[in-house]
Length: 148
Image (tube, rainbow, N blue to C red):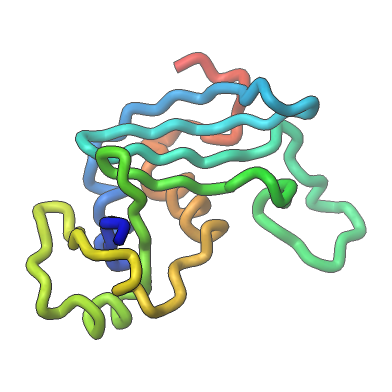
């Protein structure tokens, strides 16, 4: 089975806000339209948050307002890795129910077999928004022209 890391939503928020993230913004070249990704790294963690270069018109006539334009299905909005292993974020209460017998590391993570995660994981759109709010350090992560 595949070993993955799992972290509670509250520990994920703490990780985002309390670490000093190195930030890079780059354009993904495999797409005809402007797809960019924020690359945040700190210690063993790597976060990729993808976005379109053109922000939505907040005055547009859309029935469903999103904080960011929806990406095409083939593009993952949010990727979280730790030393080349996937990290899954789950609600804090589900985390306690599933992993109360596991020892957390210094980041609040547990290393488990993928099949031990028997609950729904956090929404990638919400996690991507959390990155913008908590880990940006005041940097506009939606600005593809930003030179860091």
